[in-house]
Length: 154
Image 1 (cartoon, rainbow, N blue to C red):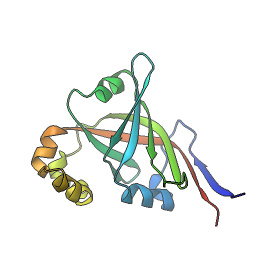
Image 2: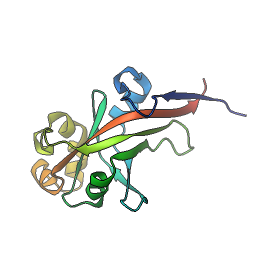
Image 3: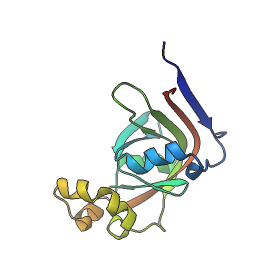
């Protein structure tokens, strides 16, 4: 029987200092895709695969204008954000928090750190930074309030 190291940080009410969680911060910095879950006004969860950037203790993603997730956030700012882990179900990170449109964040085409992380993916999909930013013009800031993580012990 395998044993796991389990970490839980946060009370669900106050922001978590992601930058102080070395392993989790490293995963957030290296993983390209996260699962972002919002809640519809009717109470139904909706999950979407998104690109994201850890900026200190928050996450930044970009959304298409008029996306259902934006309507959901306007009604309920509660969100979940999860990393995919590995194929065997190890190295799992799940997070809960709140999200909102961040009008002060730069457009994706002007965010050097975001472009550094996703330049290869943007090019692979046939976009330029400008065309990507035009398709995903709405910055969304995620504040994490609880983190749970599992990994094999050892």
